[in-house]
Length: 135
Image (cartoon, rainbow, N blue to C red; front, side, top):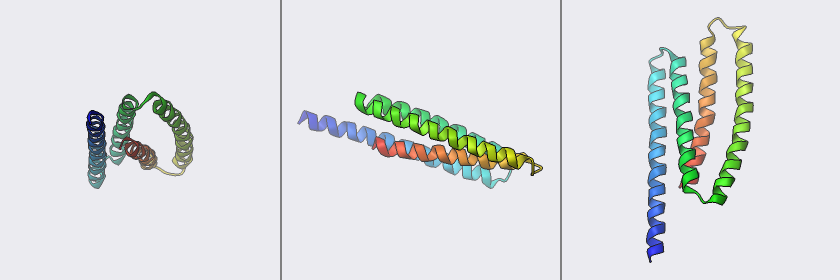
């Protein structure tokens, strides 16, 4: 009976954590869309959003590492390493495209904004995946 109560408590705490992270993710998205809606300093909006998502990714990983068994920690660490490699490749590709576009456009901030938005979307997808693991 004690084990059942302990398991239920851990599940509820983990579920509450995941829900609070999802709420944080939704709030970041809402603030980002509101910032973009002002049509002023859109690159700054995208950069702030990107940094906030990156921070959320880091804190989500830290929480997962601390709550998983050693075997699952190792598995997550390997998965995260693979994801980081893919992220680096994707970001290099995006940066390469932006470099080419800078030569053709007068204001490179639009290109930078779009690039940063794409990078943020990539990170958001990973945070969402990790939140599903946390449930």
